[in-house]
Length: 441
Image (cartoon, rainbow, N blue to C red; front, side, top):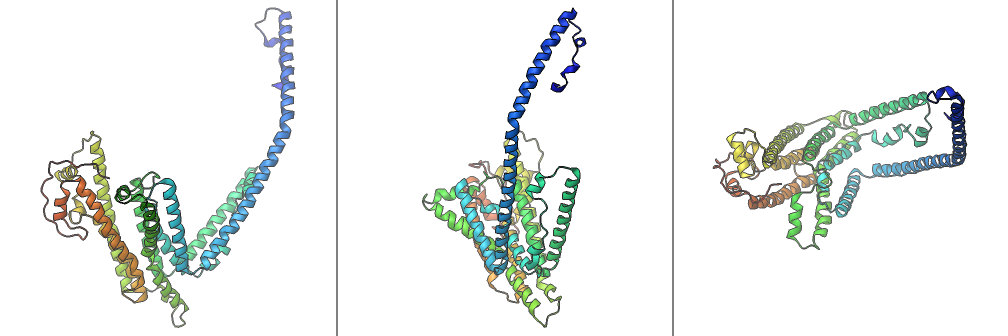
């Protein structure tokens, strides 16, 4: 518009009445346009040096990002090599201490003491994979075999044409394929027993993570309701010590111990590999106890899945009923459970805590892999299963004490139904008319 003011002629003003008025209007428009052009040129002239200076600043910033990325890559590479060069158990302990420290820091900053709960389904599988990958002969060369990343900040900033974008996309695709191929080769080089242990612990962790997620466990504001009761039970100056010693450190230590049966399996695989009398396939050989461990683990995993799902449906029913808009038609047994305030149907008919029973037993089954690998029925890696059993005894006692205070019928449920081990129950009478004292969590 500013560069083509000459296109405006008197004919553009058809509503004026005389030629003189049209000419006058046109002169006024030409004057306004000249003023606008002068102002615009002045503004651009002032802005150009600033734009040049800004461009130089942006370029300097990108160079800084590249330098930071390079130094960060060196630091990460150094940590990675240090971690790889450490003895596998020592490396796992270092990782555990780091996670415990982070859990403690986040709990203090957020005043939320359920940080370890968010790691509970993830950390054991992480440790098992650490031990499994340590058995791979390809792991020492992994870092040097990885392709370099084609996406540097300076290169991204310099992309101007579609051809350059296509070249970068092709390089990224080739790098992804190379990394995927390398990872598949590394996993295939892991001895079979350790591969099975890593797979089972991962399936367990994924399902438990999903169950925790749908209950809102990964919400930063969500916290296990029991910690509030624990704080009320002890002097205020003791709870910070309890937080750092038990919640952060001990629980993370327990998560490492749950994965510890993978360590004897690792040592057995390395011993077979270094033995001159062993065949190349010896480290992939399984014994009968391995198959028993797999079968028990899968059955218990399915039992825990079913128990968690039944509990999920029950709590959804409770939530709908609390809205006062519940028009669902349920069986008498479901209605009775809603009146009681707790679940007594399905697997909960045979055990008050079938999911707890399956969770504890599942890790005893996992321990059998270390027995199959070492040939020793009682070895140090049993410590995780033992401590988990003791932990659940204490937490179950505490949970049931809260349920007793909330639900009038819970004492009768305790008297008629087994605590953990599934047993054939006695019949439960109809729920009493007394209401629960508070809402369940």
